[in-house]
Length: 136
Length: 405
Image (cartoon, rainbow over all chains, first blue to last red; front, side, top):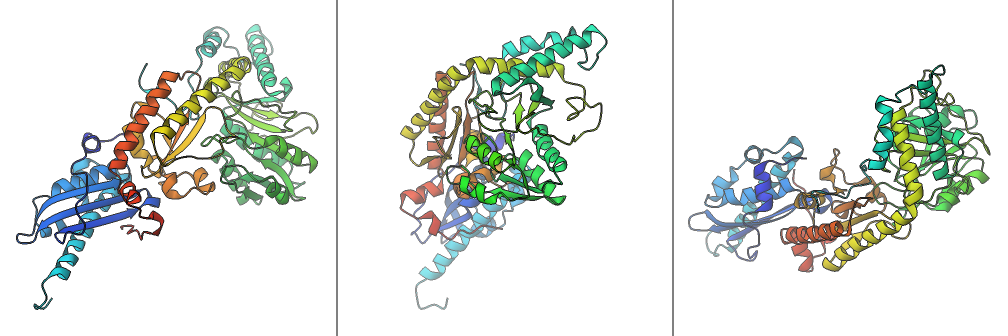
């Protein structure tokens, strides 16, 4: 299979590789995929609770070059956006940006799912960590 | 050292320059049809073809009259299995094969099942070998053919053909072996191994593509086949079609070279293979060899690199041509059925790489490949959430995975 230049660039120079502290209440962690399917993506976001803006993002991915590129791109795109804006990212945009062939579309779907899972985790944490007194 | 490095000799091999030299006159000067009986062009071509029958026969311990030329091993497998099923239909309707066979055998057996034949697909152990007692138990009065490959194309594991052949003979069952990967690499003798039918391919042994052969035993027992193609009745009526004389000459020269050089070449390739394996095992943790090391082609190494998906690994070693059992490199998006048959879990099957060494590989190349693989595995493990979890002591088998949509 031949890869687009953008996939190769992300594969050779993945952005935002690493991990954030998953115990931090402002960090949301999403892990999607399964080892037996050949793809696992872990995506983490650090959100400023005051502004709702995603200030940092990190990823680690087990998967093919397109999966690595999709998650790397996802971290680039979520940074600086609000949580609500990040939720608007659609897998088709990733497909178009990276020129993914049809057999690799699932990689982009997984990246979208990873963003959603990380945000869901962040929101759950925020809800749980709200000071008692107010009605949740 | 020239890049990229070719280390995928199970897929195909380059034509040996000596083979090419032998072939060249047959394109332009000695271009006759071997079936032309009435002029010197035809006689010349027929002489050349007959010489090749002897060259092949000498390599495998057969007689020259027992060699049928085909377009390659896929055709040989089809002809052997379908030809036997049809010819011996009155005697029985049961075929035994194994789950790790090449698709040319598996899918042929499956097609015959649709036409009313019964087929048994024997399982293999963790080492990739069939269980001889399981084979014995599978043979019935209706069994007409056992088809078990000599060497596997992914893991290089050598099946116990001699024992299988003996068992088949005792029970009056024909024995076909797909020896595509084995002929010219390890000694094969159709008499000692009790082989009745054997598929051979030119391009896996430094001959040209598009030429192969089927060994068909002529005595004890005399094996008959129903032809699968109608035409001029060439090749004792078993395979019609004008002979590919140029390709045949190439196959013959390839066999002659293998016969002369196999002993030395297999020692050299086993040493290179072992060097590669030792270097990778020393540099990396959690690497696993797939299949038996003891019963194996000298030039094969199939390894899983835990926590690193195979296609991404291939991408990182772009100047090395190898292949992977990862789903992402196949059209079906399923990981290798051969590795799965060994009981290797899907997650490890996704991380496998097949190294096929060959005649033109050097020690320098092996060292380069070992370095590039090590470097890439290390880089991708830094990127792998699974490697991170494993190092934190998480049991990956116990994790509930969100499979996505």
